[in-house]
Amino acid sequence: MSSLDARIAALEAELRPLPGVLVAFSGGVDSGVVLAAAVRALGADRVVAATAVSPSLPASERAGAREFAASLGVRHELPRTDELSREGYRANAGDRCAFCKTELVEVLAPLAARLGIADVVTGTNADDLRAGFRPGIRAAAERGAWAPLARAGMTKDDVRAAARLWGLPLADKPAAACLASRIAYGVPVTAEGLARVEAAEAGLRTAMADAGLTVQDLRVRDLGGNRARVEVDVALAQRLAARDDLLAAVAGFGEVEVDPRGFRSGSMNELLPDPVRYR
Image 1: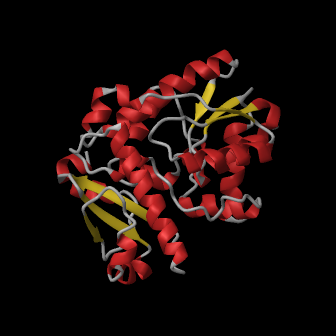
Image 2: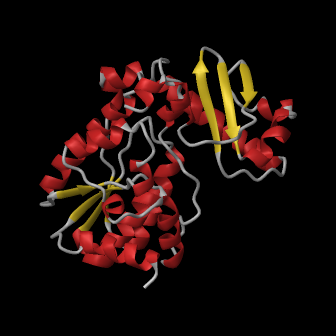
């Protein structure tokens, strides 16, 4: 048995004893693999997918999540969460994600209970646990949600390999963190700010596609005021920086720069002081 086969078996072994499970399904590959594994282990009738709807979730992600859940034949709930009602989330200090995940689990746990389900699980993988400062993971765990991928030792590469093995359409889907992750720490999070980032990313992605530039990972980082930093696939960064016509598509920002280092997941954490980032 290969190491991937062993980890997939471990994942399914984590899920198989459960009477039922509610999967916090963001629409991404990690939680999508958890959802598919739960169906394989339990059957679709004992699995519920829940995708939280809020200004933090790009509208484009919602449609894809609905399609994927339907393809697996599972019940799909779309509960509303209100992260913006939490002062700590709006303040956007280094622990913002803790308030987001607290809101998420405190919405999903009662939903699961109403459906007669005891277990709420997330798409946190083994790499996430080793990634340093992740206050949201701790907040979710403290409120009873748990992570089958992490327990099974499945890394991000394992997750994508499993998705390909099972023929899942999101196997190569780019990472798509919440919109608030684009806003620099210390810059207050507002519904308007989230919408501005969403529109800027959509506009730039469309402009690049129209120019024949196929981009996988793209982020518009709100640095405060009218300043934005764009991160794209590193192979495209220099070409994009030379195209003022494309950067004009980053609507809502007066000053736009391109990061020559390219896209890096969690790059906003680089701006945190070390004692905060690694505590």
